[in-house]
Length: 478
Image 1: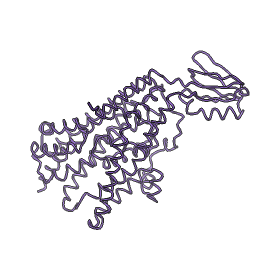
Image 2: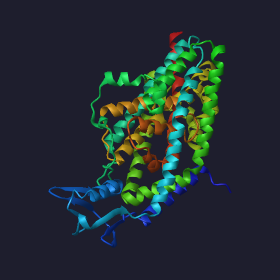
Image 3: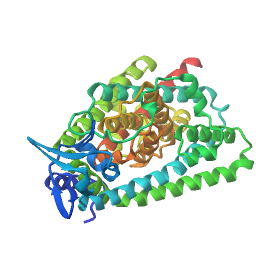
Image 4: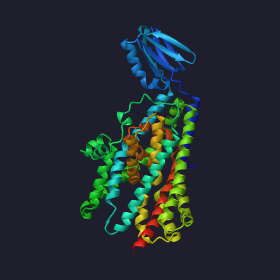
């Protein structure tokens, strides 16, 4: 019997946790003193002392080991001390030949995990560029559907921003990634982390001077702006003249999706390697964070599904909330089972037209567009995931950076393909935009499939809600 892909990823995730807990990485160091080689274990901190002392905490040792060795060889310090629980060992710098981390199996795991992460990075830019240009450029004649288009895009935009803001409020309120037992203070981040929000700078920096430079520097905000701008121009151009270019972007988008599918084949092994390394370093505290993170994401999605959509339906349409949810229960079930907005689209047509009495003139425009650009659940998840990973690494995101996350998550919602798993690729784009280490994806990817089921339900229900609201809004203006 063939094992489904998401079960393989889940198995890799569980085995990685067990392996990491059993073979805990104690950051074993190897030090050569004169002609003797010593193995040092269970270190709490290392200090280099002369007139003043320079201390490295346990979480920093592995990352700073090269700098430590260089400082020892420079002979600028007099003593090196290892602090353990309840005791301390001190050595003269003059006697030390080298200091290094003793290699173990986690070094191999790190290689496999980083290759997987780099493959995701490799895909993200061409996928975003092609998907956005193709999606925006293929919207069609907006004059024909002027009223409907305005209402549709307004609802999709406002509801997506609301979902992202709710996600940011919850993740900042509950802080699932914060604790004292795991830090990454040794990571070097730009000074923009603590910068205040400057709207003028934000708007200017969004426009690229050179789109190719933006691509080379992986400046996602500028890439998004350029791609949408090209798509808008294509949409207003002569279709005969631009159809070849649109076909090319469609083809590139399809190729990137195929690459995603192939890269994700190694996801179970990569998840095992990444999560085992993280758990080995952080211990059981990381497991607690993971369940807390899942609770925040699922809780936020359920609040949005039954809270916000109920408000939208009650105040913006003539359909009762009970009648709405009764009418869309079938498409919600399909979305939950398949984790695919595209797979649920035919069922959504049936639910909206048969159960909610939405005319085909509305569903034919709103639902296909929504399956591509209306990803409320995905946008919320990406905002929560980005801040959660930042919290894991001890990064305090400024208002400016969280505003960038809102903008990027909206753009990612537009650029996401309606198939399972592509949200992870878009998350790479968001993390890059605010200087959060994308290695953190390895921490959350193991539970992504479970969360994908919930966020897809929110995505497709939002499309159904848009149909009902736009049907009633248009009927009022006739």
